[in-house]
Length: 257
Image (cartoon, rainbow, N blue to C red; front, side):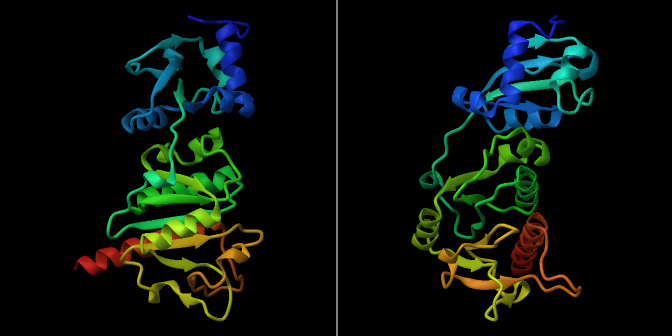
C-alpha cells in the first residue's frame, strides 16, 4: 500500500490529474468513480492502471494493474474526496468523423465552439438518455477527456459516438449523407421545434450561449426554436439540447405507433 504523497507514482498521477498538457502529451486520461470506471471498461477503453483505496471502495477491484493507496493519499488525489475510492488511468481513443456510419434514421446533435466542460458533460447525458446516435463537436475548444466532462457526464462520454472536426467539414459530412439540418438561429424564419419533422435522418445544430451559431450556418438549414411562455428569450445550452433530444425521441416513438 502506498501511504506517502511523495511516492514517485503518486507524484506522477497527481501531475496527470492537474496538468492537462502533460496528460494530453501522454495520451491518457483520468476517470474517478465506480460507475464512471465501469462504463469506461464496458465500452472498450484500455485501462493502464487503477489506484484504489480499499477501505473506501469496498468492492471487487477491476481486472488489470491495481495499486492500493491509503485513504489519506486517495483523498488528496480525488476531486470528490472519500466518495468513491477508485481512480483509473486510460488510453485516449482516436476517432475520425469518417469512421461514423450513420443509420438510416440517425439523429445527431452538433455543438459549435463549445467551451464549458460542464455543458458538454450535461449534453452527453441528454444525448445518451434520449438515444442520439452521435454528438459532433464543430470547431472544438475543449478537451473531451477533461475530468470535468467525465464527471458531469457520469461516464456517458464512453458510450457515445463523439466526433470533433471543423465546422465546414461537419457541414459537408451532413450534406453528403442526406441529413436534414436544423439550425438554431433566432430570426423570423424560425419554426417551433414540434412542427419540424425530426423523425428521420436529422441534425440539430447549436452554437454558444454567448454568441450563438457562427454566420457560416446562415441559410444552411431550417431555423428551429423551442417555444417559451416566460419573459426570457433563451435557455442554457445544455437545457436547450436536452429538450430537443427529448422531442426527437418523442417523434420517433410516435412514428412507430
